[in-house]
Image (cartoon, rainbow, N blue to C red):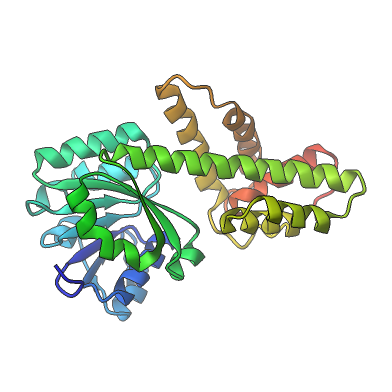
Length: 299
């Protein structure tokens, strides 16, 4: 199948989903979009996508269905709920899940699709929407190798790096949890160290340069700068979503009897930040709680 004949449907038009959809259109794929809030489809329809009124109509002739949804419940409801799309898929259709979900949820989706004679791939993306708009995400993908091969032109629309991490879809979800957990711990460390340096009379520019030298990945450098500048209203991933991820980390670790010590510490700061009305700021704004607890005044 070529780009011009492979029919793609994308479901979920938040910031990341909209960015992916824009890149897919630039890749010359026929694209159908669906979102519960129909107004979010309008810019993409104006750019050449077809807007579907229901989930079932969105997927009925699609070769590849991409979901970009908030959490496990949203994914399961969209796939297998009362209005879900599962039984409307044509045989052999490939569902590409990009959401950060539990490995157990991924296993359940794999079985649901196998029973329906369709295919599930987990293809988690690493990066923020601005990176997606440039086509520079990293995609962690796992599942049937032949299905992955079919989807490579799609992944290339929005990814600079495509990393196959296994033949079972849930393995990509494990990989995404590992990467997100590491980034969350780095954000906490940046916040603590900037606060310590500030209270100790050290100029923060030198510490920022040090972070850049130690953390070569652009995502870490982005957050080192964001926390240094305390620029939390420019949202890459909101604090409410970060709190959701922390809950997911704790559940995923518990399923394999590992104690997520760092997540347990950070989760308390997310709870405090949400209680202080910060849920719509960038998730790195939890570092403001570190400053507050250290007695530094908020601007």
